[in-house]
Amino acid sequence: MFAHLVSPGQALAIVVLGLAGVAAFGITPDTSLDTLSVRSISRALPLPAVAPTEGADERYWREERVERGDTIGSLLARASVVDADAMEFVRTDPTARALYQLRPGKPLLVATDDDGRLTGLRFLAGNGELLSIARGASGFVATRSAPPDDTRLTLRAGEIESSLFAAADAAALPDSVTLALADIFGGDIDFYHDLRRGDRFAVLYETRYVDGEPVGTGRVVAAEFDNGGKTFRAYLWRAPDGTEGYYNEDGRNSRNAFLRSPMEFSRVTSGFTLARLHPILHTMRAHKGTDFAAPIGTPVRVTADGVVTFVGQQTGYGNVIMVKHDGRYSTVYAHLSRFASETRDGARVHQGDTIGYVGQTGWATGPHLHYELRVDGEPRDPMTVALPMATPVTDQERPAFAAAVAPLAAELAVVRDLPATRLVAAD
Image (cartoon, rainbow, N blue to C red):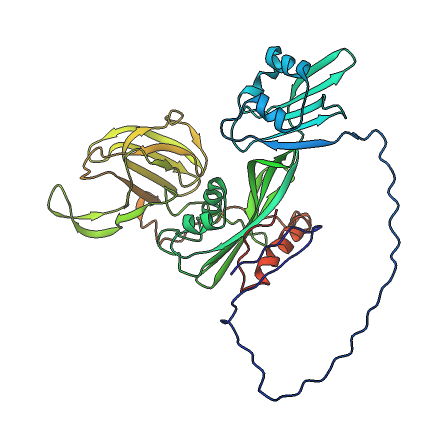
């Protein structure tokens, strides 16, 4: 079932189908029905006075979309442009050459006078610049400029049937937003093992528009994930010092100081244990780390802020990176195929940075990452050990934080209050 909602300030339309099957209603034969009296009421409503906007562009703009096989000539002809001078200008002016890079589906806005002569044209070029052509007293002038900033919030939600990406695709969620969603809740939810059929999510994110057309996706500003009956929420907030992070409604940082997994999506093939049969040495040995299977070349991310203490080769580990974190913690990333270009001894890294890529170096029988988390130099199971939390909102910042996230919480509540519906989109 689906419900379509739009953001505050626009109309709200909810369609709920099949909440409990289809109910059938009938009328018993020979039952008499009372005749209802019908009364028509009409009322005259005053029309609002509309004052003309000073300096407004009174030209009529027409939109045409590029179709497969279109040329700029056929596109302008379809827009009822009859202007040989305009065609000659478009053909010869270097600035207007972007009009020859037509992609199906892209819009072109044109304005004409009563005789069909071109008076204005707007087109978003492939490099993101806005091409404008205007007719002046001495002829046409073409300019390129950065498009005006028109960022709107988009609310989408979905329900898990098989995987997060499948549910995100069903809700038309951009891949970048899906990855951000997994990253925001990565400290609380293992998206490979913890997802359950029926889990639900809602996410509010930025979408950039040019001339009414979506052209890019920005940041996630609020999100909610219901996993196994437990609800997690996160709100983007910029602290007075300019740092940004995601926090729940109580001001707790939504991310741990450490991520549970050094890869966004992976599969554990060998867990932390004090005794297992070594696949190469064929002896019982402790496995003081966690192995994550992934194709060679899969990016490996550092699980917490820290400083790189070793980049190179070690017997058994193969290509390995070691990172020292604040306090008592350090991490190891082994069997890598190669290192990220910025990863070197002494480099400061931040949680989520790509530091290397999955490989099969050292004592490895297949492509995977061997990951270790050490506390006071002793290996611990990264999947079960209690991880420290990142810094929460301070008491002094709490009033400003509460005021900033209140409208975002209201947006998410729209989905929460309609448990029998699926929100497809609200732009």
